[in-house]
Image (cartoon, one colour):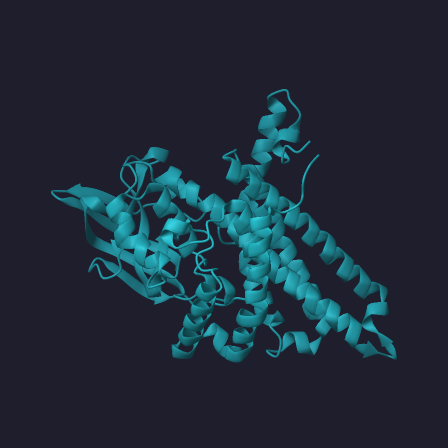
Length: 406
């Protein structure tokens, strides 16, 4: 029998996180109002207050093992927690489980040397610093083998040169994990990862790029590395392992986005249902109108499918099974239903939904980016289709490329 019951320890954390979001994060979001999108003194004070509250509730660092001050949840547990956190843009920050730091912490644990863990993971896990992951380049786009930033060996380390684009959190990061070429073009073994301190004179944040939606704390930045010298001890993992390590980070990170998007979509549906029950037009509540009922039903169906996809992908990651196809499918589907559910909720609220009095207009702006970052839907669809065709040409059913469920 397939057991859909959550393990008791995960169910307990889920309840605690839901209460934290309801009682602390959402009220803090309402308190900030428009300043929820402005990273200033008031914003930072609220985040510190939320972090103190999270520590008091034993929820800080849910993704890290206890020896690093965490709760010790695996991918499946984090799938549940992140869905709850998605209901508020401040919740993950309060738990110290926000992007890109969460993924960087996982990567450091996976590949970091003991001295690197103390120097970089320790302050990151304690919430004293932020970080960024400097991979994307404007010219390369979604082609990781097209990255042009280079790291050349010198007498006592490496010299890194290149331009990075749309690096989330770079403006407030204390350090970056930089993807740079150390080998021949077109070779997956040609890339390595380097830890670069933000005060390195060769690291320069050119600007925070203006964006349609909410800029994450630290913005989305254009970065230049010019004669950026780092020591031999800055290499993260093995030489030439950068591409493989980036995939170790990016797969779960994409899924983490999906988890949070489900939380956003759920809050949008909650607002839509409340509006349908309380708003009357022409002497009848909106809930009695077939169009509104269809919107609510479609949103519920899409959320149900999204949760199952994300939980199954998290289950595969936790077991150590191959998961890339399932994560790509989840990323495409959840990013697209997020846009649909938020759009319906906004439409149902009319001018109120379009106003800044509700978070729906912010959800709407933020949702549009979901289909672009961490791989646009078109690239993921290309990968998904390639795996379907590969299964077909092997003489077997394409079932293995559709999640492989019984």
